[in-house]
Amino acid sequence: MDLRQLRYFKEIVDQGSISKAAEVLHMAQPPLSMLLKQIETHYGTPLIKRYRQKWEITEAGQMLYNHATHMLQQMEMFDVKMDYMMQGEVGQLRLGVSSSCIHLVGDVIRQFSQSYPKVELQIFKGDSEKLEQMLFNNEIDIAVILAPENSEQYEEFPLTPSPFALAVPKNWSNEIDLEVVSIQNLMKFPFISLEAMEGYSMLENIIYYLKEKNISLNIVAKCKDITIAQYLVAKEVGISILPKIQLGYVDGIHFVDLPELEIAIQPKLFYKQEATFSPICRNFIALFKSNT
Image (cartoon, rainbow, N blue to C red):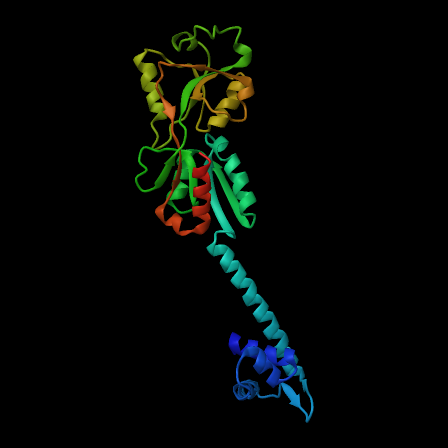
């Protein structure tokens, strides 16, 4: 039994006669009568009892009718879902966002969810090193992360870079003259250091710069996550040199520009070329680019 046979049988029952069903289906009556006989032969039982002026559906016929109705409804639903999927309106998108880039995606995620409410967004958070590896392993579709040194295997879209600045707890303002600040006179304070990540040279660049200035750090904590580093500064664990970005704990932090420190983070949108085969990914990438 195929869907065509099920559709024809259902139409016969719905119309109450083969002749009326043939009219609706725009076909001759004899082939439709033959089709009904073939189905009855296939199952070895009458599906419709015929009388002189009327006919009635048998128990087996009713079971087949119910099955045909269900299958045709399922096929219609599948066609609708397939159409939605081909338009990128239903499915799943796996998005990786590093903690240092979370402030760049909020508006885009909101607009995407409003435009495509049937697309499930699965969001992964972590440091850029981890998320780049997940993108490489096809565990996520798109990553918004800090640009690694080697990214030739990806398609990319650059976002606004953020310079590094000195992050000082606001309550320490009385101890530090923020108007005449320099790195040299701040190294007596406890320092929170960003930890090195494979494929990223930010920390090495900062350390190299400080070594050139003959500055040794009083490191009290290390972490890869910029959000955690900001939190520790806000809680007065120490000072740090961090990207000047608006994350969750900036209310307790005073950022001091360091013009002599010419280092910045470069966030980018990364995806593999094959991601563009997915309508959902294409829709998200296009929306992201139009908002930047």
